Structure formats: C-alpha cells, structure tokens
Amino acid sequence: MMKLDLNESTNNNLKKTRVRACFDCHVYCIINVNNYKAIQLLQQFEKTHRGHRTQIVNLDELKPKSPTDIGYNVYQT
Ligand SMILES: [Zn+2]
Image (cartoon, rainbow, N blue to C red):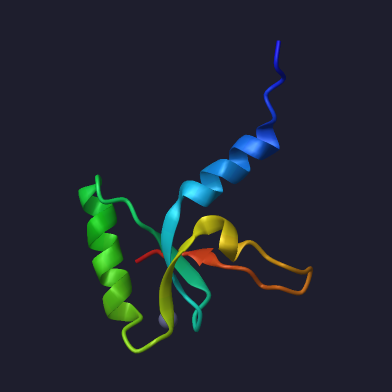
C-alpha cells in the first residue's frame, strides 16, 4: 500500500490555488469563480488595491522565503 504524503498533497493544493496578491500591502485574495461571495470579495480587493502592484499568482509563491519574511495575509473586508 502506498503511503500518502501529506506534505506533497498540501503543496499540490497550494500550487493549484490561484490568488490575486498585492505586493505593496502583502495581502492576497483567493480566486474562486464558482462562489458569488468570493467574486464580490475579489472585486472589492481590486478596488482597494487599484494603483498598487497586484498580480495573479499561485498561493505557494507567497510562502515566506526566510524567517524575516513577513509573508502574506488573507484579504478581508
Ligand atoms: Zn495594496
């Protein structure tokens, strides 16, 4: 029987999760086009961060790269 590697599966999920990130504010918003509330939140995110450096990335790209890296927070209204 094959052993399930939890870290591997978590990493794969992070790679598949697309988010819109603001590099100026260090926040991100998960892109979920199947959820009405998530779409509204994304529109709010784009209004709030208009003129900032935002980009669509995979969630795993936002993981802290060093102990001093402040990382990213989930966007909330
Ligand atoms: Zn911003």
